[in-house]
Length: 125
Image 1 (cartoon, rainbow, N blue to C red):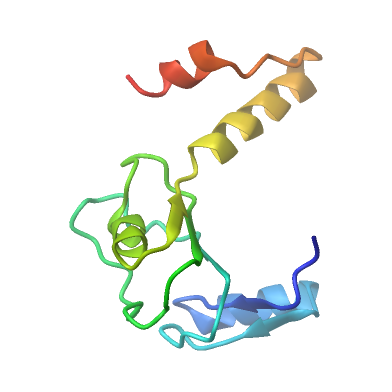
Image 2 (cartoon, rainbow, N blue to C red):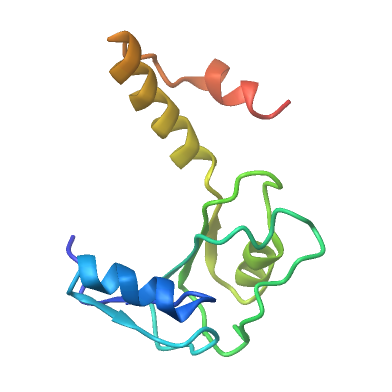
């Protein structure tokens, strides 16, 4: 499935503009500006500490959206808690992390590890 539009916001707008130089098809909005969306991804470090808030008013986003946070520890950041509270599907970055590790291991060792329950349970400790 192809996205109809990719909108990027960065706390430092100049960094977002640099990405636009590389990827012409993205649109940049100011931090805190919230256009209509289907998927919202937090790719910041905000949320690593349990008392951190993303600083964007998400209260009027509606339901049935997808909130994704690249952070996997804590398993549920305030961003994800809010997304869930507002009636949206949420997911953290645990599986992204695992599959990145799997592909890195394959690249360096020429072995593709299996991702199974045992591997997934290792990160739950």
